[in-house]
Amino acid sequence: MNHRPDDRRDNAQKLQSMVQNTLENIDKAEESMAYTDSEEQLESIRQKNERRKESIESFRQEIKDESQR
Image 1: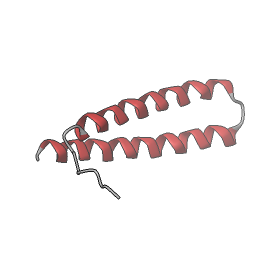
Image 2 (image 1 turned 180 degrees about the vertical axis):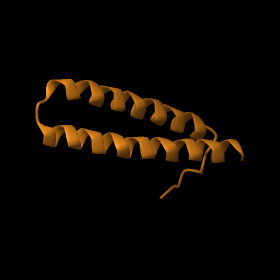
Image 3 (image 1 turned 60 degrees about the vertical axis):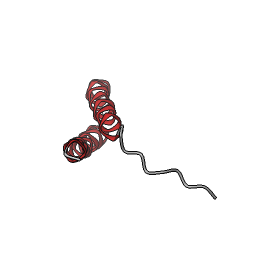
Image 4 (image 1 turned 90 degrees about the vertical axis):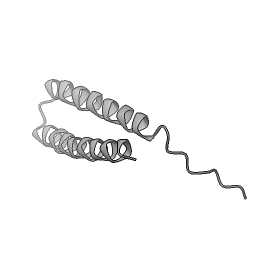
């Protein structure tokens, strides 16, 4: 079984792409809130977006760490 070498040259770029995708998902989720009357669904979207925001902060910290290597 061959293992691929650990190539981290494009990690920061991949992480930045993940940040962008997550921001887009937050925007789409917020837009979808206008189309529901369910308080349960609204709360679910809010909670998911909070987790997404936490993920973005983690991604940004990883980008910072990668740029210091």
